[in-house]
Length: 335
Image 1 (cartoon, rainbow, N blue to C red):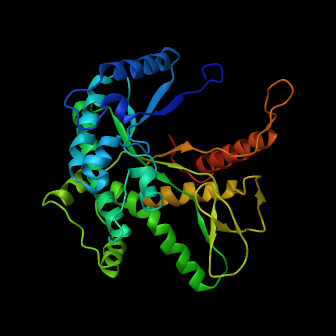
Image 2: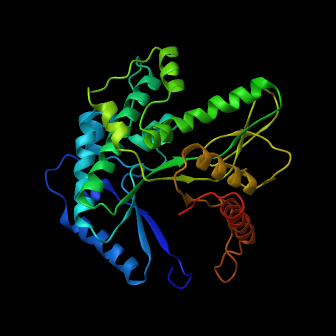
């Protein structure tokens, strides 16, 4: 990485490496020693560590014993992890992400948050309640991180991407807006410090009553993030139609005739990346951090055990150029 002049290295903490059961009173010092070695090696080459505190990772014991994030007790267990990391790596690490792709709890509840469901319960209700617990945990982590080290910069992270309406039919445009709100809901809370009205109305529509403590809304208001990070792989198209769909990193989409498609079925859209950067910056007026942008493909090894992936080089080059345009031509602030 140093030879390639990398300035930042993002990696994720394994919760169970620090607290094997999740609810342990004391951390596993061998786990902290391991991460210290990684961090020190980065700093040795002037590479800034960017740490994701929770990346689709819940100790099995917390799932079995407490029901994972459906249980409010996980907030305290998570904060114990945060305090350990903030304290142990104070002065070494300044950039943190509270949760990886926090919006994925609605789409991949077990993978992202360790949620399992009973046959007779409303999965969406459970997921939104668990999401509330994660949002409170994130806000408290921001406050804690700033208290321990005021130089800490603590951000949110979103699985992002623009969602085009399939036609100029207003119904398609409305579907595009409402689908995107499922993503923006999380960052709206983390950046603005309150539940947006559209979310509250949606909760009424699905007959969901959020269970919260008396000071939860104050905590959300006080614990807003310093920057917004996100992943971008491809864009999507939404609309009521019988036309063919194409694969994406996590979501299927209607096919876009204007874009090339990878062997994995991902439609490659660097301009959509620029649009996403502008949409997020216009919405939040916070610095952005692109933390995932890669191409999945069916790679084959050459006789010399190398991957001649010019398609990946082209993908990254086009997206880097789109990023540059967003910064230099559109005025988007990117870390």
